[in-house]
Image 1 (cartoon, rainbow, N blue to C red):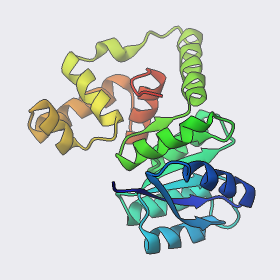
Image 2 (cartoon, one colour; image 1 turned 120 degrees about the vertical axis):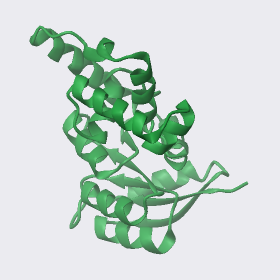
Image 3 (cartoon, rainbow, N blue to C red; image 1 turned 180 degrees about the vertical axis):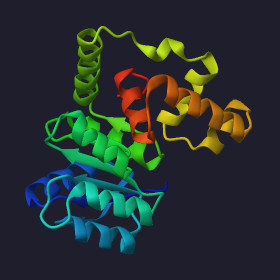
Length: 217
């Protein structure tokens, strides 16, 4: 069995120790290194080539979101899971834009960590149930406040399928293969989706999918 190699990045030793102890209870996980700040995390990601990085946001020197962007740029196959105290869509949006695949709250249930690591290792997104619930509730409040209707129903069935796959982290080429379409057709669907839903980036697509509960949490 190939083990999932994990880098822990948090400036609090007690947090790293707790994560290591929890993860090493499962034979499929191997903690290969620990970093105390963002710069060290970037360096260790280069040298250790982990499958997954569990990354705190608030660290001295280089912060977790900036470190995530550097790690993903240098090592696109490495899945970064943000591990944070902050439960709001501003941090989530920044994390997704930086390339993070998951977002966990530090007060979440223990099982969430293992599930998030497994998802990130497979290239899939994962979010704490609390995060998803907050985003859904905020989304519904915004619709009601502005008297708007959900634009999801403006999408065709094929566009909905495309949206779901894009939100799961699939590339245009992968979506084309799964749906048996040309890459050009997928790009057209993607453009239509973003125009109809007023989305501009991949991070916003994922955030929308979380609010719509299109992504399992």
